[in-house]
Length: 265
Image (cartoon, rainbow, N blue to C red; front, side, top):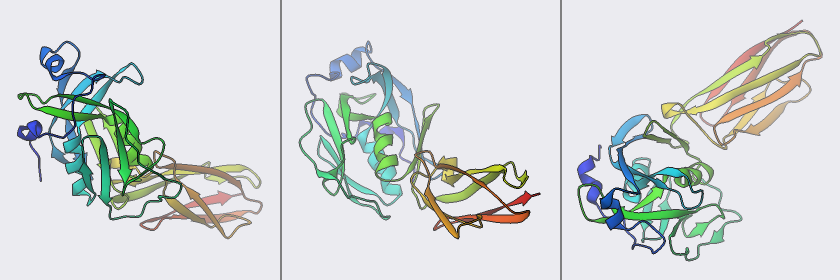
């Protein structure tokens, strides 16, 4: 399943835009640099491409860019199929549900930009700068996408856990559930004292699962509480208990369940 770096010369698509770094500059090595990359899917290494460190034209700061083709191959491992036409990376098949309500039809991105879409739909945050440069060891123009903007799409639209750390790009689908981490602070309280119940919905590779619906049972004065995780898979809420006793609070998702006991004096 590994996609070794010999594939780096594969054309990810797209034409050189006037506002982007030209392949000749990439060869000159004055504006960009290549660095080794590990792409990790669901806790396992799957490819070792070279990524580029170059200026993000939108922020003006150096950022990491990875060939679009390698992103497509990583998504395919999770059962997500895509097409790339040089300006739009369109998700054509995804094995879990995503909400496409309020999504607008894709347009044509301006020169120097690309867009992400799902079955031809997009939201306002799915456009990103693109860079066309020679792949290392070749003179073949390849389209690169910034990890930062790709992560926004993966996290906010495909509901995947993502992280970029020490040149490793990690991702996991909502189906790659590891566990729910659950805690209460404090777990021994007086009647009427506030308790904060918090935790994280963990996917494979210790990635947080974003926008996961959780159901909470065992709270006082309510039968069921629902909440969703934030973009990093975390959740937190506070409550009080008006009677002494030991309470078992249960947090449940569609894939996992965890419990914690709270003692009220």
